[in-house]
Amino acid sequence: MTAAVRTLFYLRKGTLEWVDAPDIDMTSDMDAIVRPIAVARCDLDDAFLRHDLGRPLQLAHAAKLVDQRLLDYLGRKPFAGPFPFGHECVAEVLEVGHEVRSVRRGDVVVVPFQISCGSCRACTTGLTASCTTAGRTPVSMYGLGAATGGWGGAMTDRLRVPYADHMLLPIPPDVEPATLASAADNIPDGWRAVAHPLNRRPSAPVLVLGGQAKSVGLYAAASALALGAESVDYLDTDPQRLGARPVERAASWRRTPARRGEYPVVVDANGERGALAYAIKSLAPGGICTSVALYFATGTRVPMWELYVRQGTLTTGLANARAELPAVLAAVATGSLRPELVTGVLADWEDAPQALLARATKVVVTRARITEASTA
Ligand SMILES: [Zn+2]
Ligand SMILES: [Zn+2]
Image 1 (tube, rainbow, N blue to C red):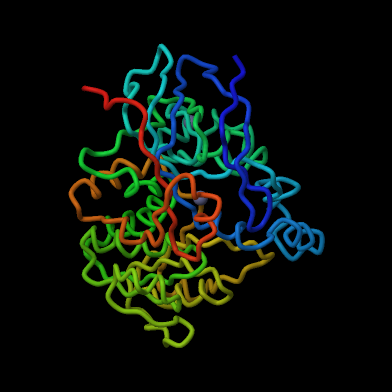
Image 2 (tube, rainbow, N blue to C red):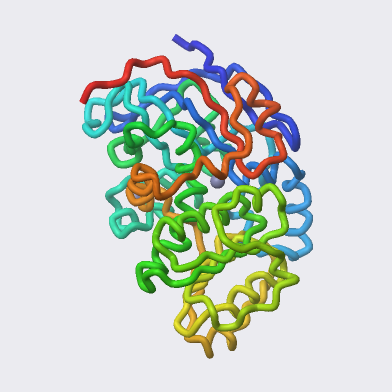
């Protein structure tokens, strides 16, 4: 009873390889076993597929150039392969435990990248990224190996999902699994960066600085339009991202004078030195700046006076992917949010080791399902 499960492993920069991994089974009556059928490359995946991040981060940590708590969250050897790759997927449900009520075999579901229980104090207040029950490690998620709990990766034939009733959300009818492959992580990350601010300032103009968080910036811009922003200005230099055109205006933020005080809602998905300050300087009085970029450096500068005089709010942190998902799925179901426009490469599952290395903002790999559609 120890059949092998074919799983794609990250070995090192530029190298993914199929491995026969040990089979996995349910360990609780609240679990489900799912089979991913559409997997997306997260912006973070792209970074460690293209660059050797681990050793430089360790050296930078030793030299105190990066925050000294960074490795508490990424492990002592960050991004060191081999580990099972992938944490953004739509999957078909293969098996469910006796206590699972909300999904059944044959359902096609989004699997949020973070593990959350749905019932602890953090989860019940919407902070599913900070679930206190699921955490074996400070960050509990698929696709980064033991450093984030050893939950496995999305490029596999069998993936265990704990707290399945809470975790798994069926995708809307008539929506392709590939459309929602990134709904596990990057889409809700972009969504939250504008949805909460626009809730406070309905239809306000939005500024997005694109860059390091490649697809998240585009999803934020597209979400702002879906949520009725009066205008969305998107600043970036990457021709592929600009080609996705979910937005109205584009240029490098470095060459564009900050339109001081114009934007009640600003998103920093850029991550370059100076971008955060630019974002804050662009805030209108009472505006909200959300930074979705990762600033590892020790002592990143924040212009507190600029923030003060604008009565601004700066917010950042992991997206609560599971908590944002119902609103995201509703927007995709109505067609107001079309995440498939961001997908640059759509490839076959078997071609994943090469396809996932493509120079594109978003790569999605798909395969046919093996279960019959469940009848509700
Ligand atoms: Zn991710
Ligand atoms: Zn929880």
